[in-house]
Image (tube, rainbow, N blue to C red):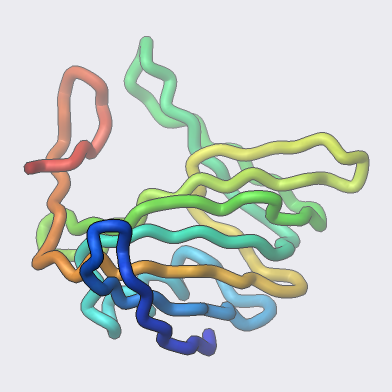
Length: 150
């Protein structure tokens, strides 16, 4: 499903964060692989960045007026120009909040909140474990979002 290498880096505050270089295998689904990795490594709070290539993606957009999500599927080869997100927990489970921007064959871009995407080529990620017990989430009825719960 994936391969990884652990590297330790000093944070700007001088403490150490666990950091992983993660390569998700070709044809795997990004969000499932990331969730599995975070669960196995017991990462409760962190961030994710990456690049790669996919053959399909499902994006989600929240309409603030209706507080309803609209999902759209793209089935075409695209380059991941930016994958960025964070790791937290909701109801004791890993909660990934990931956004993805992809470049199409005609050099236009699509993107948004990522529900799922299938690798077709490579997916190279950096995952940082903040080493915190957890950062939780709670549903906010005003926005319709699962926000950080401090």
